[in-house]
Length: 401
Image (tube, rainbow, N blue to C red; front, side, top):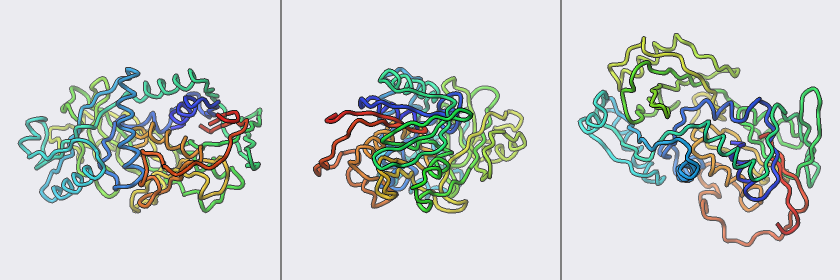
């Protein structure tokens, strides 16, 4: 997410510095996803996830086409494997219409199996606008854009702390050798570490930092030929979307992710989970063999709701709640974060400019004017010579720009 924000600020003629603790950018949450371009049908109407996913999907397809980033609009089947699940499909269809998620149509079992002969179901939703993307190529393209516009990515440079000094921040970075940067704006796009970054800003109220809950998702690849041309998802459950079938750009099939609440960040894949995966997959792909499932990779979702609680919305936190000038926090940016990345970046730039305030979920100011900008007059303020930094943004503007 920090890469997309850095790109957007740099293209707006800002001087941007990205602080990255790892050896490369985007190596955590973004690099360990299913690489799916989501349509936007799972999220409540007027939520940030719904609005930013739908807008982000359109922007992402356009960007991938312009930059020749490998991607395909393959479509997705959400399948009911028993009659009781058909009501869930009807609810999803209604939500898809409400969210403007693109073309979605009901299929009978025969129609679905005509598209995907290996499929077992009693009915399905065909979501045409779902796709897949090479996430690494996407991140490299955004980084290239940002650097071409003047942004600087500083690797192996962890954020230590930031003191809000009124009109600017004093940002301490580094490990053995520490440096202090001056920044007028600080964008906290640190993903799994966003809460830790916020906690190291002394004026940040602890009550406004949502608790982080780690949810691990494991993936298994499928040996042999891919059984389906489209993505296949079971009907969603209260705790997630279920173990689904996806493709990568090389047409290699994989299944996942599962859901496991954990206390620590751990990317190992438990090979013994193949038995659980096989049982779940057999509901819609009865020909699956456990021996064909091979451990692939795992990711960690930075959730901000406790186990068993309803799914939380994205939290884009500008100055309004915490009162710290120039600070923007991004919390809970899990799926559909990759799809929504370009739209979230635009929203962050809006927050940075002080033109809007984003909160969650219904009743959000975003709901009334996103993606259209507000028509009320802008405050009569002037940006003076300033720097923008982020643990994942930095900028300098001159008077009048």
